[in-house]
Image (cartoon, rainbow, N blue to C red; front, side):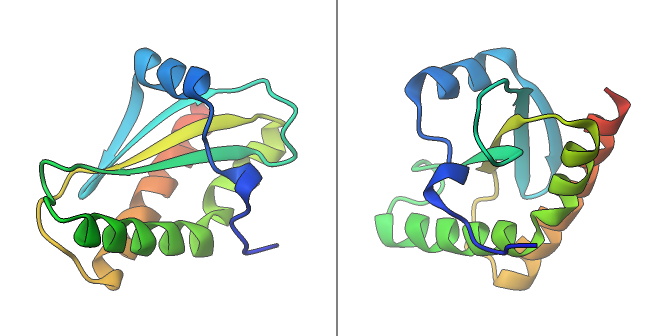
Length: 128
């Protein structure tokens, strides 16, 4: 499986983002909240992802960007946890990964949170 994180895998459309936040199906796995909805676009990827770190928690842009970089890398390495069930069911989804912690974490803690969250999310998807 390709471990890249291309531009087409990122959620950028304002319309889709507002739809994602209005539906509000979510899974929580500290320090992340995963918001998701099904999508019927023609994207070649099963999931489009938005990563958000609150300005309220991290005042300095350097810290926010650092956390986003770590989250993006962790998702990139572990996205097969969600891609496999999506491909099996022929589904496409939009996912928002929101960091809800309030301190800078190291990569291991972030990766374990992403893995737990993606596992919970894949179980929710398989339920229907």
